Image 1: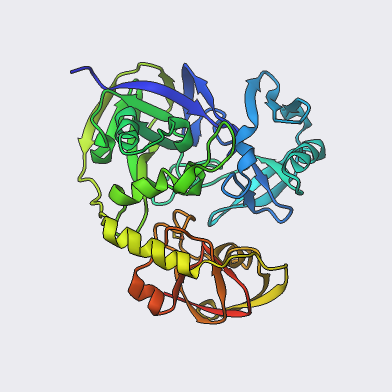
Image 2: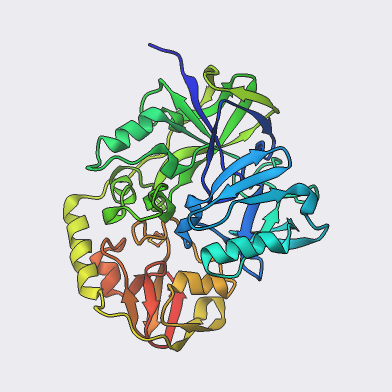
Length: 387
Ligand code: FES
């Protein structure tokens, strides 16, 4: 059998924008060189991703001597120069982390604001920026939580063998792709050496709605694939849909395509839970019944998050999860697509509109008043408690 080898090295210089395939890369503690060093934020510093602004994935990035060169549909080419960056740092919120980010320049904000059709800012992970990986001394830049994501080609092949329309590796945005393994063999790795770099596997990667976006068109795939299929065989007991492994590097150096991959320590893989076709069908029927036909005109509603002791003046257009996040709450979530059930909350009062076709709740949970915060939009004043 052929040896395990490194078959792809990818970087994504601006979070959620298109990736770049490399033949070699410098490995820094906070990730591959140039990977996720930039992020877009709202005016109040909350990070923006393609989960909500899917056309970000159409922004093509090229690393050049002075910075980055960007191209996007309908936009003039933009060159980002490090020499233009301001000396000001401002707080950026990426998930639960508050990070000091270096503000770049208003002209870059204008370009992105015009492209996305909303006001945003470009921020750089500068010399003063620090962000520690959870349960580790390692650093990470603006990636979701870990500096490296590894997936084996055989895991993707296995997933595609279950799909009517195959998906591409780029939908999962790995930094490192390994070839010649068996499907999901990476789940069993604890430490791995690739070329001259030692990596430690920290956590399986929980997949979200971004994987349902076609990177070439920014359109969502039908039937929320591949999440719908991952739900059937890659769901852990918390409801996370796992695909790929997050790593930290134990030393720095260089990676090159075709580097040999040697597993130096193994671990027991996570156990996955199947969802039977019968229960999936039942969920679909329930969700259809709950689905409202027309979207209501915009109005203000009060959302009382009573378990958090927070009242939020919100709207009838955005999910309860997003409005909770705007109010500064950390409501658990994983897929943000109504599949995994992680964002389950109880609706004590009021009415919501349910966006889901596949509803990650059991019939009993629905009868008891539970809803999925990622997929329900308040239609009246509502009161929400923790599940
Ligand atoms: S986050 Fe997965 S169902 Fe809401």
